[in-house]
Image (cartoon, rainbow, N blue to C red; front, side, top):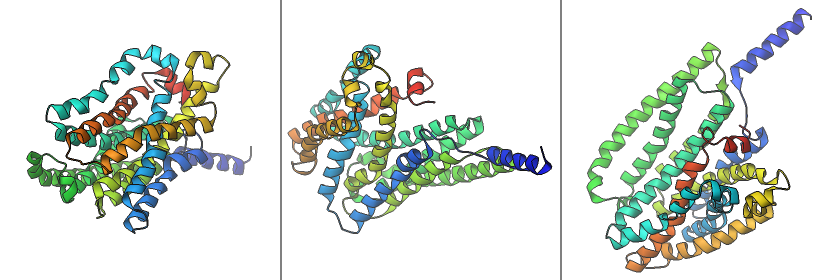
Length: 359
């Protein structure tokens, strides 16, 4: 081997060590679906803020065509999977009690508190998915040093939490949905979170510089994910707009939806791995046999779930007892999705999930 060839090889090895670029599916798929699909959030944001689309049609179309189908995606690999129903019977059937929580809270006179906590869980669910994708990229790229795990987690959670608290503290419509006893604490919480977020960002950035100077690999997919998700949340949550508590739900969540659809579709390819799949998995195999099946059934579920919910949210008297009762029941679909989602993607605890995701 010549000296030139040896030098070239060493340089290539150094570059390989300098960065780590391992994707969950492939560079093209990840950049389009897990990172680049953030453009849909910016698109809804721009269309609404500039007055090009009205609020209710935008939210209703998103809810029926994109958001509800992503809830159906969870059901496609749980309730519709014969093997999962058997393996997770207790989890799946007891989780249906979430449909009773909202109505019981309304009947008990604490419906206001229920809707407040449900909304908090909804935002936490968005943040938790971004954290989950970050962890998947960390595992793929062997980015698991204890210091990095701590700083990545702290930076991500604070960077998503501060703008949300700022939004709640500064938007009159949002404040009306917060228990009065908490109003006096929001300013203090906002200030504390801002200081912690700045400190976490500085520590996180310093750690990346340290990694680079030490020759440790830089986890490029993780950086791209954070660069896509965090600024979008800040832009949407800190920008004034009419009826903001309703409008931002679609803007923040459409990115989450598309990420989730692609991950579930990738996971559900396991249903096409042999002739025994139909017998073993039942309806889940049919749902994921063709993309058309998955899309059509997801939209039909969206009509079933979200048409009544959109009427309750935008067409009925919000203060009426029956409206609140119906809204509490319909929240059950979302709560069920949030809870199951926290249980079914544990790669470390469930080897079948790691295998399906090719981890």
